[in-house]
Length: 76
Image (cartoon, rainbow, N blue to C red; front, side, top):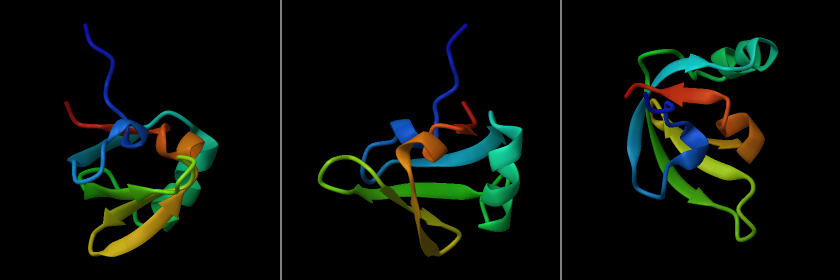
């Protein structure tokens, strides 16, 4: 049984579809920012030291801390 991939594990240019969240408290913030289950996301780039990450969510750019991105699980 493999562990689900997270947004924080995507490489620039890779896509994924949001499945669920691993942090209930943070999930409310992410939902408000448009990270809804079933939404397609694409990793755009990360800052030079790897944090924050820039992802494309439903046509707009969103910056997330790496720790936040690792709480967003993707469909396998």
